[in-house]
Image 1: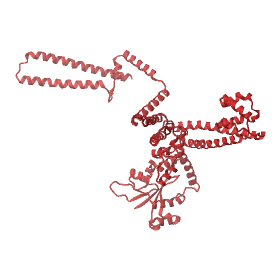
Image 2: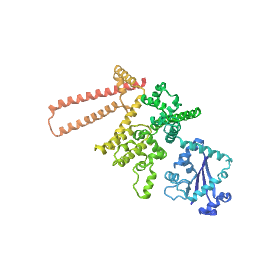
Image 3: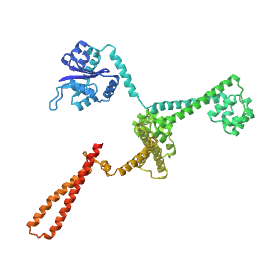
Image 4: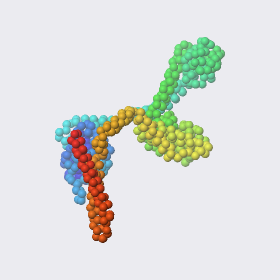
Length: 553
């Protein structure tokens, strides 16, 4: 059986015929040893056809289709032209060796060409790849490398293409930075307290907030200079006049030691840095909320922006989180406890990062595990909707949040919650209503003009008479519908006329005296004949009118 090899390069498709396999052997190990020697391998693999790509864009499209296991029309035509024809009834006397089994199965489904992809074929293709420049004569030394580099860049760029507004990597970086900022601001604030407490130790007991403490440390500077004249400014900082008076009184009777001006300047500068960091932390938190509303609006509305961002960062991406089952999502962040429990054969953890949600805190100790399982189920649904839906809406997240609230009421008060099908139907309906409302707002108002046009057309037809009415009626196979109806009537009437003399003959043969009825029958016949003539004249007049109107047009 002849073996052909399909080799896809950055410059085009190539087809090789493997001849004389006995020289190198049918064994994979023998092929592997003979690949490095071009004299031996050149006798085996012979180039039968080469199809170059038309452009870089064509090469990218072909590369994408090959990576997905799809045979393009160009590849199909190339194979059908250069391979022996496959007949339906007879056995095929050749096979096609391909690198990927996916594309091989697709080629066999469409063209019925038998394909194989095994270690032996891979070794032959490795030899083709190694000596490919020698097989094509017109190819220069650096052309293939340039084509490979260009196609590699364009292929990776096409794979990395994404919607700029839905980049979950920004959320991952932001939540990591937010966590490190929390630790850093906390440690720096403690350092400010410890440093400035040497000068004014009583202030640490009066003011508990770190940001306010750093702000006061910068404002007060030297405690000996603090007087009642600065009470309004102190009240503005603290927001409480009693606390401001307490700070002034404590400064007068403070037990702290005096610091040199240089030391106080350093304390002020460090306090300013802590204030700047805490302000930047607030801005970063606002940025994270806006990004979460863009990337995962349903997850954010269900469980909160911070917990949702932590789940995404722990899973690695929103897609990975959407792929996780709800049982995995439930214990995300508690991996150490899980493996410790498996090792010691103890109780496995009931929740991980989900524990920071307010729902589990509101549940009773008995129902915390149930609530965590239910919340993880709803979070997995929300993450899948956010990941795979094209339009970002918070409708599903809000409905899922209502379901969790109902479940809490069910555990506490015994109130029966709604069914999931009913809630999802309501959510889909509200989402569709929102989409239609958006479309109606964006679409321009054109309806009044159409109405006026319709009114005008009606008035025109009323004035012009019946001739135009006939033109407006539907046409069947190029003839007006009325013509078809009139023709049917004529046929029926002819049949009646044919049937009536037959009835008369039968009455005559039966010997029935029809002298009295004869006059009435004759009258009916004359009337029917007159009606027939009138209808035929009307039909002919209609045809003439149509011919005249067509000629005028």
